[in-house]
Image (cartoon, rainbow, N blue to C red; front, side):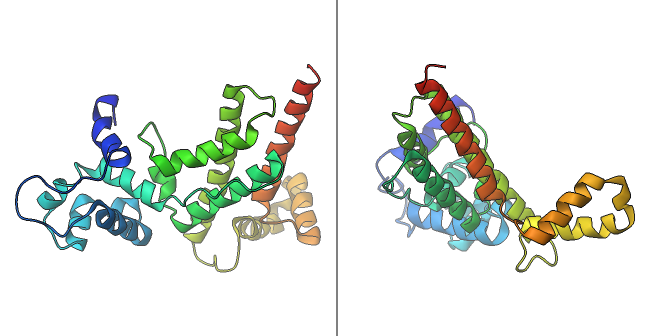
Length: 245
């Protein structure tokens, strides 16, 4: 979507709710209903299934009737993202670190509920109020911590990237057989274990890591481990910045 094409999406996401089509017979359509139908289809069939034709059929109207409310697929997806994003929870009390931990877990919960959001929230596009509220919440947690604006923005991107990576792994793991009750780390270890039984001598470091994980646990903790290391790094930067380094 180019800047010249952003106008319709901006109006749909940020403008006052339209009263309906200017001409023709009254329809039983609303943007909220269209959005709900698109989300339900994407939840069941993936983002590719939520076409204008498919949504129109779900609502028992013609595609042309749908176009009178939503100009096209890009605008439909923008509405769906806005409707599917969970409302950003009020910032909890506590330190910046505790607030970012809660932020990351909340974002992951939203991506788990609607996995197609991973596809829909990439690239340069119009973002709605709910999505920007999530960014605002993370940046507010970092306010006064000594980071520059650019550093704070980069920190939010880093955190979001980690959360998205975990959600992508979970989505891929859930798509295959034998995933019930197992996280992606455990499934990967099981697969590697089969290979290592006959080729383990070639990969001694990997074998030692797998053996340690099996003995001491710690599998499927990638979210917490990565989140902790990212926040440790930010804390170190803040400490150095406070010391004038």
